[in-house]
Length: 362
Image 1: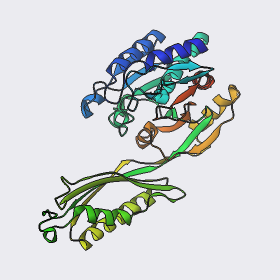
Image 2 (image 1 turned 180 degrees about the vertical axis):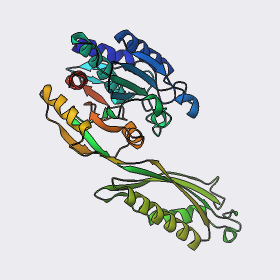
Image 3 (image 1 turned 30 degrees about the vertical axis):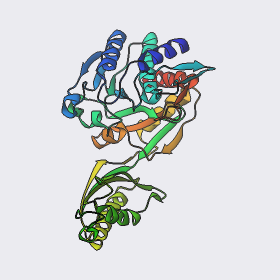
Image 4 (image 1 turned 60 degrees about the vertical axis):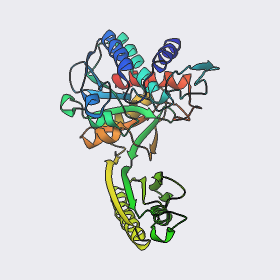
C-alpha cells in the first residue's frame, strides 16, 4: 500500500494544477474514481469564476452518505513539480511547492476508497474534489449544494499530523481602500499637491497588526500607488483582512477600521473609500457532535488519539458549514505548506488513507 500511495502522489503532483487550471488533474481523478466504481460528474463551477474545470463530485452506496473532500489546486509556484523521496519523506526539489496541500488529501481518499472496497461494498459516500480552493475558496463557493445529500463532511486539508481534528475556523473580512489626494509637481509646486501616500501611511499606522487578541488577527498585505518620484501621489490603494473566531469581533473591527481610515484620510486632506466584505463565515463544531464522534471512533480504530484544534485559516469547511453541512477539517501530515520547503512524511500519507478506510467502516 505504501509504494502505491507514493507512486500515486508523485503521479498527481506532477500534473500542473495551479488554481484555475485544474482540467487535466480533474480528468485524471475522475477516471480513477470511475475505476473504483463511483458515479462521477463535474459541475460548472469553473465557468462561474474563469477556471478551466469544475468541482469533481462522485457517489457510491445507499443510505445517508458522508462527504470526503480535498482540493485539486495548489499555490504558485506549482508547475513542473519534481518530487524527491528520501528516507521516508517526500519533498519538493526546492524550486516549487510540493502540492501535498492538498494532493495528500486527494490520494488518501482515493486509496482509502480502494481499501474499503476490498472488504465490502462501498457504503454511502460522496466524494468532492474542489477546484480553486487556494483562491478564496472559489470552487466550494460555486458548488451546487442541491446536488449533495450528506449533512456531514470530512475535509482532508489541515497541515497538521493525522489525528488532528479542526473544529473551529474564523470569520474572514477583507477590506479594500482607495485614498484620493491631489497631484502636483513634487519639485515645482509641491504645496499644491495632497499626498495620498502620506495620508494612507498615517491611516495604516493607526491600525493594529498581527494578533489583536487571543482569537483575532489583522493585516494590511497589499499597497499600490504613485507613478513617479517627481509627482505628489494622488491615489493609493491598499487591501487587508480581519480574521476572528468570534464573528461579531470581526464585524466590530471592520467598522472601527473603516472609521479610522476615513478619519485619518480626511485629517490629511484626502478622501478615502473603504469597502469591506465577508469572504467567508467562521464555524465552531461541538466536540460531541455526530461528525466529530465518527472521526474520533475512526481514529481510535487505527490506534490514533484525536487532537482538537482551532485554526485561523479558511478552507472548504467554512463554505460547507455555511451551507448546512456539518464539516470538520482533518490533518494530513504535510508541513511547511505554501513554500518551496514543503514536505510530507510517507507514514502520514499512509495514516490518512487508513483513516479514510476507517471512516467508511464506522
